[in-house]
Length: 121
Image 1 (tube, rainbow, N blue to C red):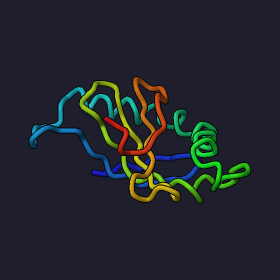
Image 2: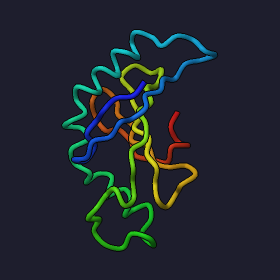
Image 3: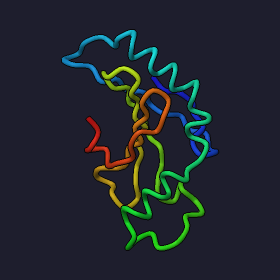
């Protein structure tokens, strides 16, 4: 399944994945978490400033000045709904870490964490 979503002013068709154990069914709580996230996404994903700040701190050798085009560095690729109620991750490709990428973790409608994808969980 995929969803259209505006991220930092650009439309993306993002795959949606769910954290399920051993092939278990997607829970009602996960479905509700996704629905809630999608309703709040326009405001949550409007301003790329937190991501820009994170990138400048994470990779100062590569990013020495203000970021004019966030998409030069970060491309959203999928939405991942965790087992924990209210937690959704926006997984992204990241220019300077193609192996691990970048994740934006949202919990109960707020940006909680920005990190490498491998740190989610």
